[in-house]
Length: 118
Figure (cartoon, helix red, strand yellow):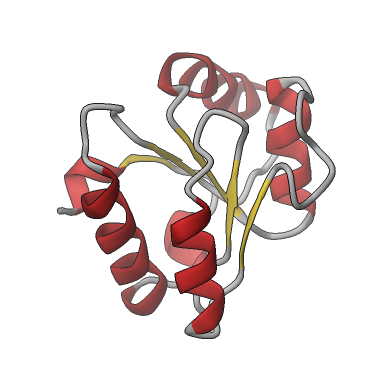
């Protein structure tokens, strides 16, 4: 099953969401889910409960949340951290490739850096 993506407040990228959804992949922004302004933990919980990989530019905070969830033994659907220096076009290209080539299971419980998939 191809992965679905949830983009938090820091990430945005409506162009990725539109392209992913037009290709049959599931992607939504926090605005679309009514989660704008929610706490980081709530974003991660929303993504996990909807079996979506959380995509964020807030690497520091979500990296800490990832390790905290591991310590508690709670599962999440995966987190992809994006370095803000990566161009929008490159972000979209790599995420679309991951949607096509990856599976939801590939990312479950993991923290990945988008740059590592280029």
